[in-house]
Length: 326
Image (cartoon, rainbow, N blue to C red):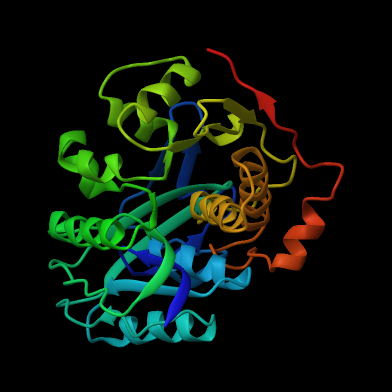
């Protein structure tokens, strides 16, 4: 089977509780970025959203909605949560035959959303799948966050990418950062496009660089051919293969809930690259898709089809790319 993109990473069952903006039992302090909750209270959520999470699944679903052929490589348990994850992927026309049911339990994420800000509690099941890419043809591999004994998984992905001259998109996660940049330098060296937020970018270069252009260059020097940094309300920044740098503001759209924004942005960028668009255009597509996702509760509800994305990028409100100088 041939795919446009194969995604590799964690698969999680997501539970998101959306709280009322104000309640006597909790306080959200935007100044020090804390959510204080009274111990022992039963707090009523305004809404509860159940969804399939993990970067590999979210990217697979987002690209499938856009019309790309995708397959997910991940591991889950043998429980009801695992069946729910697989069922959602099947409904979204994502290939699931490479999902292994070898973990003791299925990984889980529980989120609290209040005033459009989100706090996550996660549990990653121990263990790591043994990826077998035999007979799998694709042009791109998207390597998302991997937990457990992730080094073996990275080695298998890199061998597959190198042997078949594939393009690699990479978004490191908490387990990678916990072991330091040196542990995933081989992955960075083979990366065609790196997706990180500003905080993650600083952790990779392992030094404080305030200038975003200098930060992009420092990341590119570690091996990635192209780099994109997202920075919340400040927008996104990119550097391409010619070392030209760009900045792009966010769309002026209402934000309801931020789950899946980063994955939606990466999916939009990757879909543009699949369609041979340059990085500046790809950043616009990513920004549009992310804006659509954060306008709804949950990481999937705001995803777009290719025709919907095409209409969105024609809007006068589409942010315009600007050159970035150090």
